[in-house]
Image (cartoon, rainbow, N blue to C red; front, side):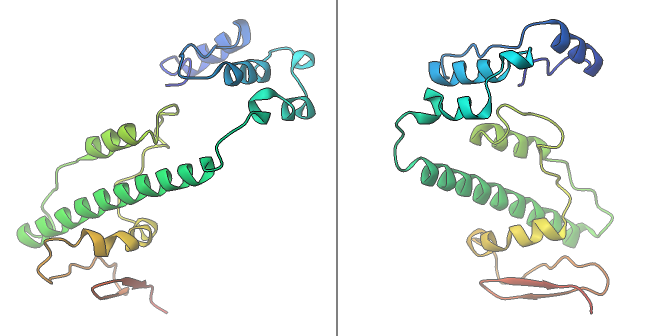
Length: 184
């Protein structure tokens, strides 16, 4: 959680103005990184380094493995894929329950499972706020982002596809893809 996270907004603003900037306490951070952040958080603007000085800081100039970017990209892809699969399974479960019990049946809320996933994968380690946690509502964007995981997640599907559409929309489904078209 970020510093002053549990504090009232006005109290946090007062503390920011009156107190010294927060320090990274954990030994998880390198000395170069802590020094870089401390220099960026200087209260008095004249004490803060310029961008030219920061670009020459040891934290930015130090030797790093060639695969850092590729590792981060792969880790992000894996986390997104797992989250998409989780959301797909939940959607499928809700649709199955609606098909069994009728459209008025209420499905239990399971946002805790998504939040546990996000903490486990480090998606919201340092900035835990309401806008960081994805909505569980089913929107066109979540449908389209889950298209790639549909084929992987259809493990125990007996061929009966359940399509979610608003009035006038059309969905074409095959074993490998879903195309969601809005009316013309």
